[in-house]
Image 1 (cartoon, rainbow, N blue to C red):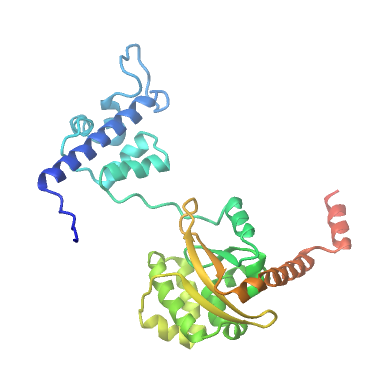
Image 2 (spheres, rainbow, N blue to C red):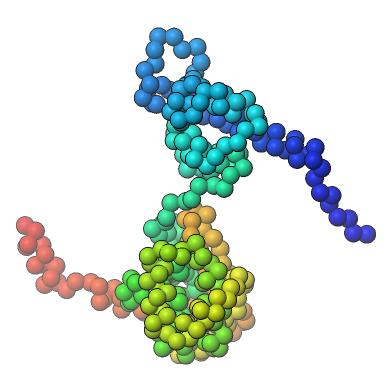
Length: 314
């Protein structure tokens, strides 16, 4: 017998809202009581019977009336705007995680996360630890911001490219080697465009995003056609087949993970879809190690240049 959950009753919804307001009031009070007047730039005065700031002081710092703020700490049913929440967060010196908690308790959409410049060293070490399985990191515009030697062995080392060209879509649509590497290039590339449009909708109008899509429309007729179709697709576990020039046929299942400590950054790990691909993983990682060595050799200054630099700095 199928049992369907009953919708919440009006009384239950009222109780849930009351509990949310009560927790919001307790949170504001706890944050107010931990701040000293000197930290807030307020003279302490001779007589203070309560720890931290007074309600009227928080109200003054936030630009709201004392009555309204008092009602807020009394869990009254009043409207709280995003602008006021931002002022309260600033007055109470909330951290980023406390700020998000405040917005959640007020039943408001959390504030935008600051842009992330790139993954931290721990995340890159995780990608390296996945070797011999290919793995890489993409930012919000699908720029390659991290990869391991197995991934370099699979698609070529992105370190050999200019930073602006280290982008997954750019490689798929402008690198002739990728067209022969990807079995069913057309189907894979079209799916990637639909996934990219859905995944990067928050980037519309952003400078890097507009330059990338504009140049791709100019350089690739296929990209222009599929981009203008406005197709959208979610990313599921995707199977891709490769015709690798050195290793031979490879089949991978791609798994996507979000990096919670680096908003906008996603980790892609390639898991072998068959035993034959699994046996070839060490060979693929070795090919990537060879490309890393070549990059290091090109990047290393010669002995005379090192000597010249040392003499110049004496």
